[in-house]
Length: 90
Image (cartoon, rainbow, N blue to C red; front, side):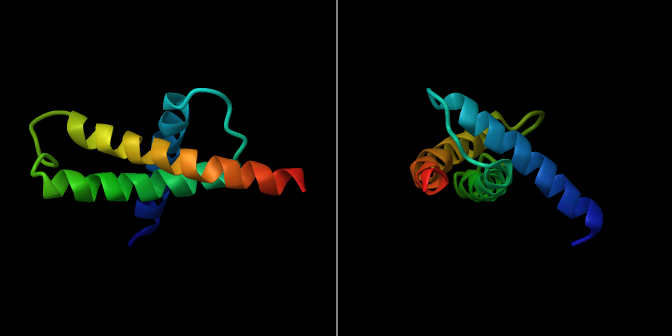
């Protein structure tokens, strides 16, 4: 993987992670780096699932793939936020 691929993954992870946080109601007190990690993982998992359902490669914008990615990011944030907020209190 080249350096541009790493930067692209970080930027996409940030966008997907932030969109996942926006989908959830309320405030999530997790760090930005954790949002990026969740976003990158959600983007990879969403792409894999979209490929499994054969909706990853469509003409134009892959809306279903993006929906999978945001859904996985929201799920990841929902699972990590209570743990992250508890560790910030101590």
